Length: 193
Image (cartoon, rainbow, N blue to C red):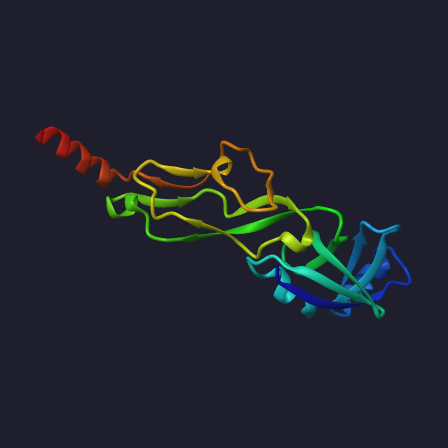
C-alpha cells in the first residue's frame, strides 16, 4: 500500500478557541488514537490535499515533532458550507495488529454481457477489509470479462490472500444489468423462434 508523510506539531492547548485559532492560521487540528494515550497535534492544511481529495487509500507516516509513527485516517470532518477540513482523527497502526480499512475496487476487462447489450454496474466502489498493514493492497482488482447478462461478482466469491472481507457476503460488487434495449432484443429473438 502507498504511504505518504505528513509533518505535524504537538498541540500545547486543546479546546474550541485553540482549534479555531489553528484553523485561521491555515492548520488542521488532529488527534491520533490507538497508542497509550491520544496524541493531539496539528498540521498544515495543504499537507492533507494529496490524502483527502483522492480515491486512493494511504498509510500515513506521521512525523510529530520529529517522532515518527504509522497511522491511517479514521474520520474527517468538513465545514458544511465551505468544505474546509475542520478536524481529522487518525488511528495508530502496529505491524502485529490487523487493521480495518476500506480499499477501492478497480474493474478490468470488457464483460461478455456488455457486448450483448448489457450495462456494467459497480455496486461497491470500496470494500471493507481486515488485514495486517503489510498485506494491504492499493486496490482490489476484479476481472469482469466472463460476466454475462444478469450475472454478478459477489463478496463471497472474492479471495485475496491475507485479506478478510467484512462486507455482507451476498452483496454484489459488480454486475452486468440487462438494459431495456437488450431485453427487447432478447424478446424479439425469442418471438422469432
